[in-house]
Length: 405
Image 1: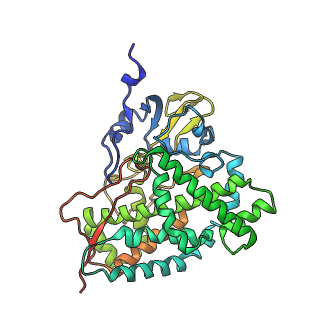
Image 2: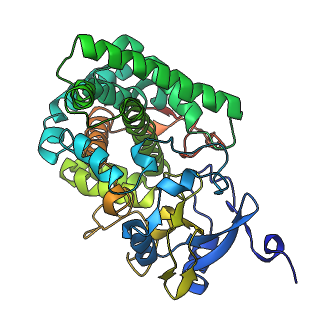
């Protein structure tokens, strides 16, 4: 009898360092939607259909907390930290999320739109001064916008914001950065947030971190480690994901769907729907899956029995291209309706910052089409340079140019 290693394919299927999606997912959705793959040599389950992915994400029998247990296979060096939202299950997760949810209500987040717009306008006006030569859109717009916003929410001083780009890029690495550098990134963020927490204790302000410090000190609702991990999770997730979603979406529009870019330039009312479609169509996770789940008991998924203690990977990228859920799933359609994508996940672990991310995407896209309707990539026939081995699909740079009329 052959070993599991030779019977099942290795995962990930490729380094996924582009905006393309491996054709194997379409075949798996049809022929073997809950399939065996080998992650770090260990057999795990890979779920690829939209309906099945949604089931795993919403069923509490699949644990995120146990995904960081010793011996559980994972993608390289990247893993959530103990005490964080990303490594907890109810009721602990419910307690943690409830504390932050008060600051992330739709109403409160919508009140941030003017700040996001002011920040976007400032960056776009500065970007316009580079019109004589190609300019990197990431360095000058898509990276500073989300980090300024999340630092504003948490109360991080503006002078310290550049530090987080380096740290978040390190901790998002799966195989492209040595493990010691990844851990150094975590430690740097932990030390910084711990110091900032101490400052907020002595001089609280009207920001989310001050609220969380109060919950720790006055209400005893958070441990010190949970408090620090809260800050790290919100900073890292609120920056790296949004930065790359904006960048990769602009690349897709300019390079692959220029006619839809022109439609947005002509009618900005289409932008909210376009953002939802870009979230569905443009893959974000570098290896197509989010964090592993571990089955707490035997569970049947689409007729397949997943045993207690077995690891499950959910392919959000595949789920968002499922033809049983979306018409013409492989085509970007900025006027698509009833767009029930899974870009933000589902269930109790659905992305806490989903509404904030959508506001930033809407404001960024609206500002770009208004300021630079003639925007185009300056790749000049070359292939975009992607970072390899990262949990988030990210370009090294995106050179752009424009003409004025």
